[in-house]
Length: 120
Image (cartoon, rainbow, N blue to C red; front, side, top):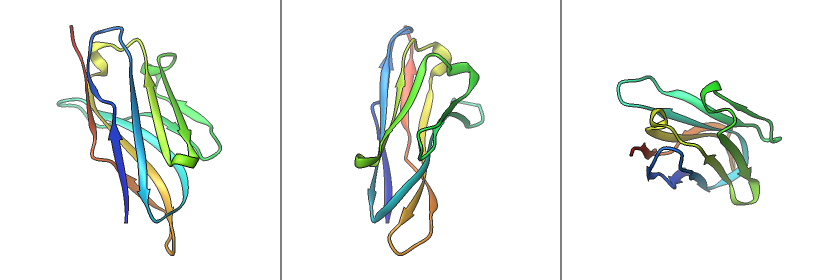
C-alpha cells in the first residue's frame, strides 16, 4: 500500500509564499513522474506543475516564473514552492505520482489534497 500525504497549505496574503510538500510512503520501489494539480471551487481540476524522474519540469502558463516544483528522491517527496501568490491561486492542491511498488507494476496515486487560500 502506498500513501501520498500533502502538507504546507494555509492562508496567505496576496504576494506571499507557501511551500507544499507531498511525501510518499509504503512499499515503494521507484518514483516516476510527480505532478501537482489544483481545483478551485466550481472549476475543473488543472495541472499546475510536473517533474519527471530525471528532473525535467513543466508548468501551466499562469504559474510560470512564480512556482517551482522540485523533488527529493531519497525522501520520496515532491515540493511546490509558490511565490507571488495571487487570489486566483486559491484552490485545493493535489499531489499525483506514478510509483512502482515492490512486487507490483507502477500505478498512479493521489494525495488527499491541501487547501491554499490567498486572501487579504
